[in-house]
Length: 294
Image 1 (tube, rainbow, N blue to C red):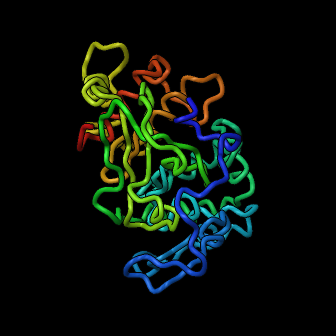
Image 2 (image 1 turned 90 degrees about the horizontal axis):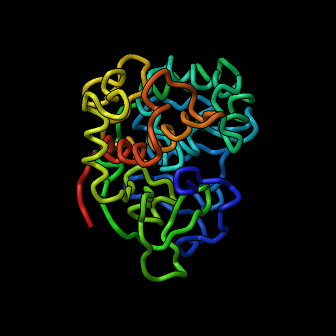
Image 3 (image 1 turned 90 degrees about the vertical axis):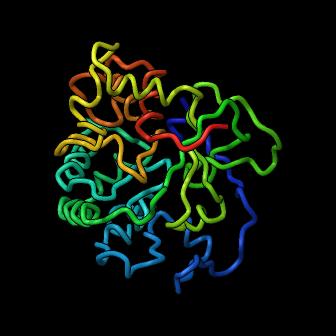
């Protein structure tokens, strides 16, 4: 499931678009960053600092925890890229609990979060948790879901983000995967907070997932029992759907991880342990919604 778990060993060191020399900008911002600055994990790129409360240091500067600023992956909007979770408005208690589980080993992400959690102080975690909890969605549509049978040829690039391969023409079968790609690769590389993503999902998976998530008497407990009507979450129980950012790939990774002997995403007490890989993809597609078919 490389499509769901973007491992560092699969990253190909080539840009998806020509590299621009010198400072870059996004529309409406007076700030400028060079591509090397944009690629740094130690900087929380913030094109519009006037749109939110001041960032805590740990969100904008990774100098204190081994070089990983929260904002570098999860962005100044909290929405994050497909390889990272959406943190916008996440309950602070849930955030703090998740970081404690990464620190203790209950959750596992040897590439990023395990080391980050172990190097980040409890005070910094609380500051980041409270800041992200206060964020409001900054864009109406961050992820557009498209049912498809084929997708462009892709590769895993810088930051473990998937891009259309500029050196390969044509398409390949989507199969049972979920492939998330930037709407605009150049803007995604700039961490533009106004440019979102397309999630290509198997044809029919949205309807199958909706049935699995909401029906009684199926192969597993319906997701709505714990996650609430509309899958918006109940208290600190994870919200599976929340426009505009909930991403099908993230949910598929979470459901698949819970089924593993060493979960990357913590533990669950019911349904996910009985969910097959195909069921996980279907539920993830449905919870992210449908906007088109190709």
